[in-house]
Image: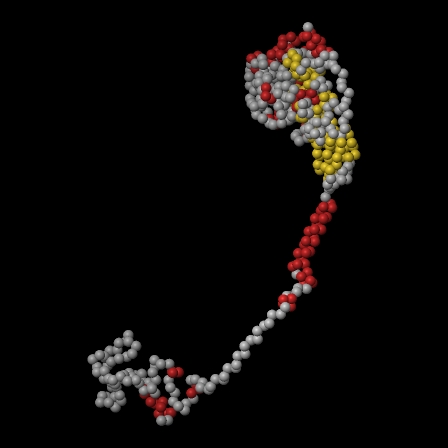
Length: 489
C-alpha cells in the first residue's frame, strides 16, 4: 500500500462525523451512508456505547493500524520503513567510562597541616588594633597619674586630748583620746602652716610642714603648759542671785562662728582667753523689768499685738517690746551690762568638758521639744529645761531673741560684703518663738535697729514683740564682789 492509500484509509477511519462504533462495518446490509437510529449517548460515560436495547456485537480490539485517541501518539507503532528517529532514537548508547575509585588522602604530620599566620597579617588585622588600643589606654592612665596633684596624710601626735588642730588657719578637728589626729588630703610639694591649740597650753605652731605624695607625714606637737593663774581671792560660786539668777562662765578660749552656715557666721575662729563672767540664767522677766520701771520712772513697754495685757498679767514671761536703749538702761540699774557677742555665744555653744562646740545649746541635733519655736507667743522662762546649754543657761534658743552689745559687723577674715554691716544695726541672738530650729542655732546672727520698740500699731510693733534681753557682769566686777560679800554676812 502506498503512502496515498494509507493516508486515505487513516482519514476514513478517523472521520469524526461517523461514530466509530463497534459492529458497524462498511458494505453491510444497512445503508452504509446512513447509520441506524442511534440511541441517546450517555455523556457521562467516557466510552461511547449503544443503547442497551441494541444487540451487542462481539467486542474486539480495533485494528492496531488505527489510532486510538486515548493512547498518546508517540506510543503508536509506526510502519516499518518510516523514519523512526522522529519518535525515538534507536541508536545504541555509548558505554559509560569506567569509574576510577578516589585515592585516599594520607594525613601528614600535624605541624605540616597547621596554617601559620604571618605576624604582619596579624598586626594589620584586628590583633594590631586591639594592641594599639591597649597601648593608648596605658599611656592615658600613666599621663593622668603623672599630672594628678599628689597629696599626703598628716598624723599629729603628742597633743593633749581635745586639742584643736588648724592647717593653714582652717580648723580640722580635735585630737582623739590617744592624743592623735589624722589629716588627709594635704597637697604635696607645698608648705603648710600647722597650729595646735589647747586650753592651758601655749600654742604649738609649725609654719613649714611638707609631705611626700602618697605617704604619711608624722608630726609630734608638744604643747607647753602655761603657768597656772593665781588663785582668786575667793572662789567664785557657780550660780548667784544678783537681780535674778546668774551662772558663771569660766575664763578660757573657745571657737566662735561656723564655716558651713550663713556667710555672716564665717569664718570659724578661735577666741583666746575670754575672761570669766556671769550671765543671767533666764531672760529678764516682766516682773524684774517692772521693778526697774517703778524705781526709776522708766516707761513700761507697750503690750504686743497678740496680748493687750501681756506685761501686766504675765510676770514670769520675758519682757518684750523694749529697745536697745531700754535694755541697756535696765542693765545699768541692776549693776550689770548687756553681754557682748563673744560672751553670749560662748555661754550658749561651748562645752568645756569636751572642748567642743554645740550647734544648739543642748547638743548637735535639731530636736523638737527643747525650745519654744514655731509658736504664736512666748512662754514662761525656764519652761524648756531640756534645752539648757552646757553651762546651765536656759532659753538661749527660741522664746525671744536677745539684744547683745555689738554692732552688726563681719568677723575678721570675712570677705563677703553686706549692705547691713556697719554701725546702724545692733546684733540680736538666739532666735524667737516664731522661728524654726535652724533660726535658733548658737552661731546664728540677726540684727535690728536699736531704736526698735513696741508701738501701738505698725510693723515695728510686731517685730519688736520678738525681742527681749538678758544681762551679764564680769566675774571680777567690784560692785558684784561687794554684793557677794554682803550676802556672805
